[in-house]
Length: 305
Length: 139
Image 1 (cartoon, rainbow over the protein chains, first blue to last red):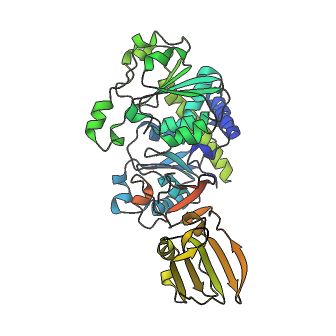
Image 2 (image 1 turned 90 degrees about the vertical axis):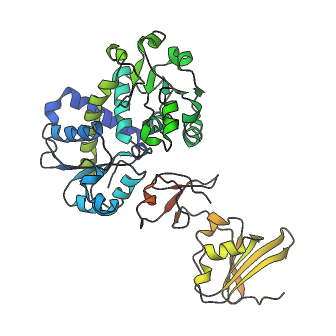
Image 3 (image 1 turned 90 degrees about the horizontal axis):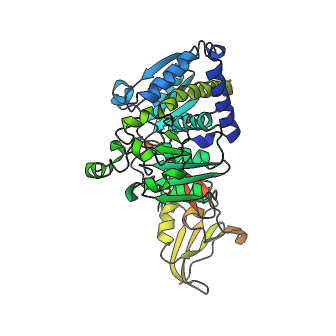
């Protein structure tokens, strides 16, 4: 049984195949409108999420399938103390595929070990969020026309930002990638990402606290939110949350074909004035997320046959 | 001091002096009812001092996890008073319920009956990671 727990569960060829399918869905939506007729997607969301859950649900609906599930732990049997393993076994009886978001790292892996249907990790704490990575890759492909030979800047919370870790992992297998890691000292990329992925693959990278000095070199700028829920200490959050704010003035120094990305939701790290800039791709990312999830659902259901 | 040689069983030799008791409990030897000798601070030409464990039983304990905690020891398998096999334990591919995941954000911290499983991800540097949250094993 194929699952998607981390982005490394997919080969590079499979990722390319998903991107190709997503682009075909965008070009020919009617071809796919009944592909999941009679199929059900269960969304098990133990942690609140607007975009990811609705994106999964919209994806399944546009494939002609149905959706069931819960949107927070309080409205599930978890509030009665049921384990993830047991909930998963039960849901397997009702659905053909499931998407799980959980505040604990590894919960979707537990689900995958206890089910007879494909499991998609829709975010597990600060750990993995592979469908966001697929979304990001599709966005880069559509905006830049390629996934190779890019100078990619990540800015903000690079320590707890799971989308950053997953995207670095995925891009590290590509040709000609260079990373520029921009963050305050407290929120630097964890050493295991640096040592086990970037350095292991022998990729060029630099680390800096100064966004302005590196902005002119970048092909892609991936902004992230400093997330309140990842801090044990509220004081640390308040001190660091405004570290990097992208404004139209700052962007005058950037390339004319820069692609500005953000996994959303944003708080204030991208000024609203940037939204009108043609280089802003973060709302397109949301739409791309639906298409790549459609492609993924089709892929996993096909693999489960 | 004299400890008789064993007829059938296993001798774990070249244990770093002072680690014998740790390995004794780690392997669950305290739960066996066969004769077991734990020799501490024995003289060793190469190590100065060493610990040795002798287990006198035809039913050998599971030594798979020994490679994780003490890869440099020597295991001698004895049959009818003769050494029939001598080896250094290999790093096991997986550790189940041997080390606990220390990551407070890991699902193992809340799912009480979930086995703590670690996989060998880097043999050269002896790195094990939790299969759920991918945190490094500590300890």
